[in-house]
Length: 399
Image (cartoon, rainbow, N blue to C red):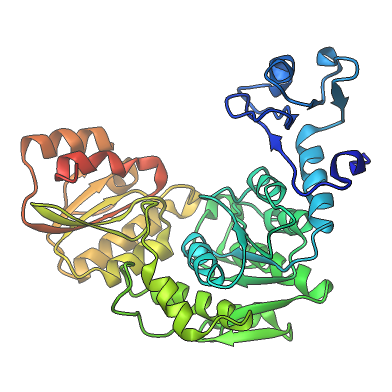
């Protein structure tokens, strides 16, 4: 498909995949999935002011107003790649098992002290989110940071071929999405697809030289090196593991000409608001909210860094055949720490030897907390997103 008619002489593009958020004059892409078909909304999008609708079902074609393509998702990705190619700016790709979203946010804060930066919002880091992020770039932007997520082999390869980054950063590799990757080696090889792309296209990487796995994956790839520094006392982030994310952001900033002092000021001003490493102080409790996601590596890091007394941990999802072993490992870790104030959520914990209360779901724990509130505690709230642990916050007297 030749997308030049949509790109030529444009300072920015306007693209939408959702009729609930459809600026006038935008291009509507009729994406579809297991439970919805965007083709059925094409006419509505046009009525609401879309300039054109891109569809892949001829039954919904409207002469002069729709563009028929074989696959609307592939078309969205193609347009994003073509638009990106018109922008001669650095594109930084960030991936990793843990810390990629926080590192992206910190890096954006650092670079924003000197440049007009565009970066992935939230965690729109998949096959839909990456092209949408690229299509939000304008000719006024001077640098872009693209977060890339993966849960299966080949996912990063697909995303880098859309975004065509000039440089990249892998925060770390760990045991996550093992059901999709098959093994830790599968995690490594998939994350390394970023390194493979940059190696083939003359790019370079920012790499934590304290991490032996990253060294093994990088080989002779051109590297801007950094090490894990000390956690700044003024940082709003909690957990020693965030020192890696801060060090990465400062390294990227330094390469692009941001002074260390300006970079430190930026990272210390950053306040998380996305259920990642948030510290909430209430009249009754102090709560570390790290409930957006969890895997064995991040769970162990959070427990190791925690200085409080009460653990509320949700189960870890997408571990496949490794699930029982990894949940038992977390229980063993808590026992070794002699943790006695522990509440566990999720049926995966019921198969372990945990001597702690285990609740089937967050609703059951909400009922228990309503009957017997926790007071004067320092609490770690950590688990996979599917647990919805944030629903516990009203019962912990946060709101």
